[in-house]
Length: 334
Image (cartoon, rainbow, N blue to C red; front, side):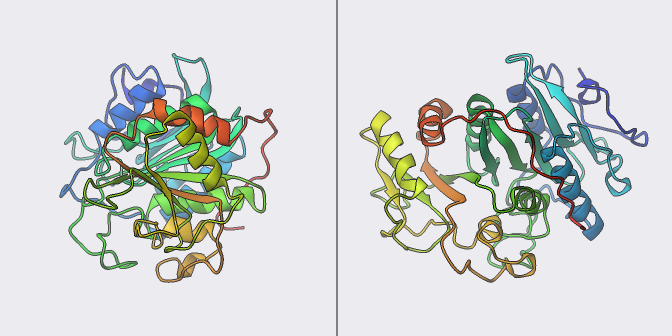
């Protein structure tokens, strides 16, 4: 069926060409469809305008506050759809924001903003985040399966290959501007901004799943950090708990924490910096003043990204909580 038929939108968009997803009966199929229409390496992309960035943050905040189909702001009309989506596999209803505009009818979304999903009946205040859904093989499948299985609050996925554009990021010039982990202008950070605003001082965690190359960190299969560079993770930290739970189920895995020789710690990750308390206008260059365990950066080699290997460890690390009413309505422009 067409993507526009997944549910009845609560706000009408101007008539425009849109990508179509056939038979998207559950979230796994939906994310597979999103990938099919995603802009790949060299396909180009368009950054959100300042107004679109603010509007994306506002819509994500409204979704987190319990509105599964908030009105689509004028700046995003014909570009994204925001709607409720009932998963045929588990019968649960989610709020989904995804890009659908395809004005040139080439089968790819026009801009490459990204996807955000919220579970209003979540039992774990986790945000499962996938910044490199094509480049880091298998992480998008891992992420949506973990999100769905553990009852996490939200799922966030970038909208393009990290190398969709050849231009350097104005935020961090050693990376390309389409790299969601290293550019502040993208929807990925707008959604993270909404998450930070929504939770305030409340306890939550963002788990970012990344891929680790086979030659990197030769003594490590899985590397867990908080975005600090070779700073030992203190006893009692949630990263220790996650490591223990992984090893209890996979004793032959080599699971490392920050403080050793592995450099893939997400120290320049703009979402991690924002979660760590750095102001929005400084995330391109400034590190957090202190360790914040809320941001969990996970690097994994190929063969260690199967969701079934992670779901029990995540469930044990973050025990389920009874469903609670949503906290507050976050707006990007209070």
